[in-house]
Length: 280
Image (cartoon, rainbow, N blue to C red; front, side):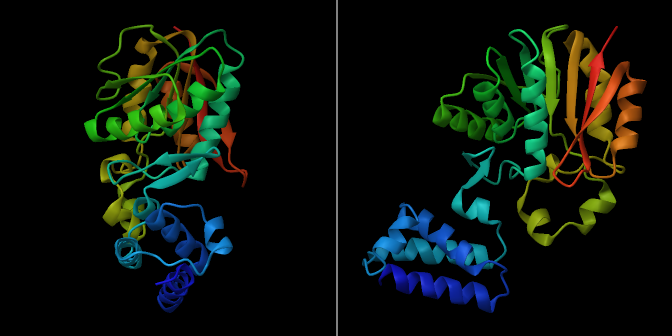
């Protein structure tokens, strides 16, 4: 088959199944299955595709039509203008997490050679971005999942980022007063919210990376309670939070000895990051 025939087949399939952006979906899957730049489609639409590549395209097409997220189908998602490998072992990076990355970079820029820990790193998108964008910082990244750490290490190698990876359940593997900043995109979806998530998310994305207990604050409480022993005096804690959790998250960090609580807002003006200072 020719490239244009595969494109038309994919676009028609997405249109018939009610996908909002059939052209974008098809181009992404073509790029993955043909291992080429989408510009190649436009330059040589008549190019014939061998049977192996055609079969690869059709396999990816079936996965996407069955509801699997596009990022898992293609194995990639962009974060802060860089491509990151993603598998079903890690959460798909989302735009709101870029708010956390931007605030962490800004905060690190006011510090001298800060030691930063990305807690629950997943794909490593935060740790890698901090390592590349915050000059002079020393970045550590942890996760309880060995599979997630494997993905994160791969992304660090791809982008040439210097990150030290440690397998750890929250802060259990780290010494006292060892960091100037702790950042995390913890599980913060409540049980009620999780039940209302799309089947696509509940079926494919790791439950442990999303579900934050009955009220969504279970992991945030654990981190806030333990972070003070790991942060140095005047160190920062930055946590991504749910769209309606600003007030409750502020209460949690203050109850655990943090002060000067501020928030990072997303492009819609919603408070999505809580930032606080540790003072003994």
